[in-house]
Length: 426
Image (cartoon, rainbow, N blue to C red; front, side, top):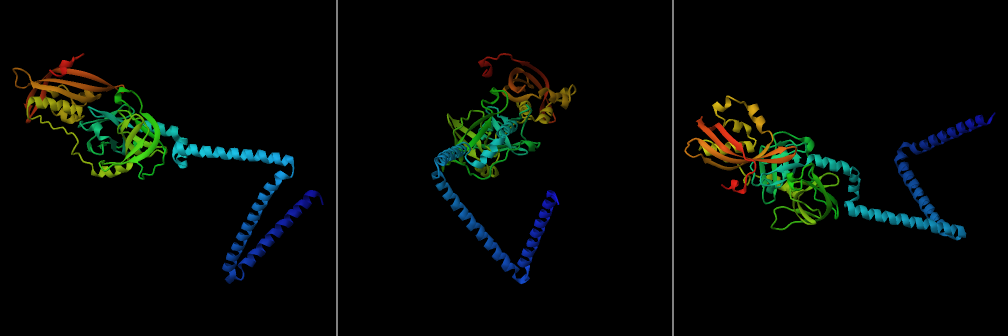
């Protein structure tokens, strides 16, 4: 019998003995059957205690060996000193790393989210939108697929703000509600944008020095391009009896134009809304206050369009340009007379105004020695290549009374290339 045959036989014999022993053990454990629960509990406790005792003795033996080992020889002593030095160095390194993670990210769990930090920043830049509010500009973000949250002061004097997406397209909300005391407003869109939603954090738990990102468009449309991301640290929750909302304080430098943008923690949840800032200190309305405020918002303090084109030719011309400003194109089209409509249709007419963000009517007055002609001055802001171009116009509109309204009949409007200061006040 050669070596490999003996080895195979030994393996078979070992396997048979193992199986036989295991079968015998199971039989002793199970039978008699009425003692099985007692045996199971007893054996479990016995072997657990046996394992713990062996572990304790092994640990004690290891400690004794470690104590005795250095004194057996000079060589062992030097080895022990080296190992102890390496162990102390590694421990100190872990302490430093732990302290850094705590101070840099607030919690160790948030550190794992930083692996996707670059992806998070790119995501935020795609989702945060510009808000053009006429006299003010700011930022905003979708909290549902058709609701954009921003600061109230951004849209406070504007009945038809514009929401500008990162691709350069813009829309006008179909409705707005807000709360001027909490400085929050919600703009509702006609279409849904589920891919742009940023989740609001429901809990208010924050760690000292937790890393945060504030996103927005500093200086509004004065700076072309994508949103800016400022990074800083959470410092404290602030609330006074005089305040209508609670605030998060950070060391981020907020700049005008970033109002209404999100304050985001490293895992991508919105914890606040950019509100106000000084050098090295900024305040953000907390996500908790957003949740509490939205159900109580109303349009009471929202600016509204109140024009009556049936009242006078001047009112009709003002209404015509205000409808363009508000992107209420059907209302504007309905103010065109039947004679004017002989040379255009809705599609062609609306295509003339696709890039208009805002129309500011400076003056409407009845032209001298006329009953139905109006002299008008107005300015437009056009969105061209993601920048605002301003144009100034003056001239006359002849109107005609139709269907109970004054409607646009014939225009003589010219562009004013370089208006002086007096032009705005004459």
